[in-house]
Amino acid sequence: MSKIRNISGFPEWLPAEKRLEDSIVDQVKQIYALHGYTPIETRSVELMSTLASKGDINKEIYVVQRAQAEETSVDDDTFALHFDLTVPFARYVSQYFNDLTFPFKRYQLQRSWRGERPQEGRFREFYQFDADVVAIDNLPICHDAEMVTIATKIFRKLALGDFTVRINNRKLLLGIYEHFGLNGEQRQDAITIIDKIAKIGREQVIAELQKISVNSEIANKIVTTAELQMAPSEVAKGLRALEISSDTFQQGLLEMEELISLLPLAAQANVVVDMSLARGLDYYTGTIIETVLNDYQSFGSVCGGGRYDNLTERFSSKKVPGVGISVGVTRLMSLILAKNLAPIVAASPTKVLITLYNEEQIVKAFQIAEEMRELGVATEVFHKPLKLGKQIEFADKKNIPYILFLQDDGSIEIKDLKTKEQKKISLASWCAEIA
Image (tube, rainbow, N blue to C red; front, top):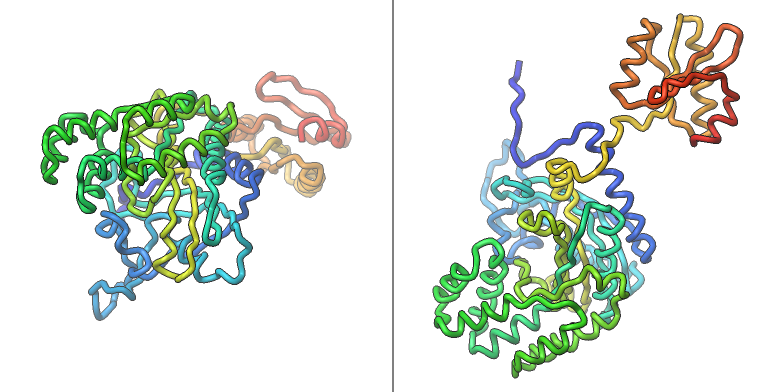
C-alpha cells in the first residue's frame, strides 16, 4: 500500500473551500463580462522557446517529458508548463490573428506552474484569472484606465476589507534612471532592485544599486524618488516638481495624467501612484498595476498587471500592444482562509435533504426531488432509511438548511434546521419562496 504524502506548493481545497473559490471566480467573471471580455482557454503546454527569456522566470519553468524518455536535455522544442497566462495569450493572438476581431478583449481562468520555493502566498501550481485587451498598432490609454477601474470594482465587490490599487509607469522609472545617467543594463537591473524596496528596505536597496555601479549619491536620489506616493489628484504637480529632463519620463508622465483623467471618481478613491512599483517581469512597457489589501500589505499583491507593447513581436511581425490584469485566485484564497476574511460557505449547494422512513418511500422521494430541482431548488435524497437522527446529522455536517418529510397521508413537511420550525407546505409555492 502506497503511503500518501503531501506535495508542498500544490494546494487542494476541501468542498466548502472550493465553493468559496468558485464564488470569487464568479464575481470576478461577472465584472469582466460587464466590460465586454470574452472567455478563452489556451493549452497548458507550450514550447520552451515560447516561454523562455522572460526575466528571471526561466529557472522556474517546469518541463514536461515522458518518464522513459531516452533524452532528458532541454531545448527550444521541449514541452513546458506555462508560468503565467500572458505569454500564452500573446502566442494565441499571433497564431489566430486572422480569426480575431480587434480590439480583442478576453478573460481566462487557468492553472499556471512555477518551480519556486513554496511559502506564504507562493505556490508551484495556482489559478490565475486574467483579463487583457489587445489592438492592432495602437491601444489607447483609456484601456489602461479600464484595467485600473476593473481592479477597483473587483475588490469592492469581493468585500475583503480596505484595499489599494497601486499604479506606476515603466517609462517614468526608466526616464528617472536615464536622467541620473544609468546605462541600459543598469536601468533594467534597477527596476528589479527597486521592486524589492518594500521587502528589503531603503538601505539594502541602496547597497544593491551600488553593486551595479550606481554611486552612493545617485542611489540615494533614486531611492528617494521611489519612496514617493501620491493620490491621483497630486500626480501632475508631484511628478513635474521632480524636474526630470528625460523624454521617456515626460512620455510616461503624459500617459499617467491621461490615465488618471479617465478614472471614475469612485475608482480614484482606492488608487495611489506609487513610484516604487516596478513589477519584475520584463515585458511591461508602460502602465503597471498592483492591488494590495491594506490590512495585509506584507502579504503583497493579490492582483497585478500592466501594459505590454512588444510581447507579440516574438511571434509575429505585427504590432499588437496590450494591457491586462491578473487576479491571483489561489494566492487570494490562501489569504482568505488563513485570516477568515470571508463568511463560511456551505460544503454543499444542497438546500433540502429528503429523509427516508422506509424503503417504500424511495420512489416517491426521488419523484419529489426531481420536481424540486425543476423548480430551482438543489435537493438530495438520503441514501437509505437510517434513524432520523443520523439523517439530520448528515444534513448538519453538510450545512443543508432544510429537511423534508414525506408523510403517510401524502402531505409534505419541511423543517428549518436553524429555527427548528416544522410545517406542512405546498411544494410549488414553498420552492418559489426559496429558489
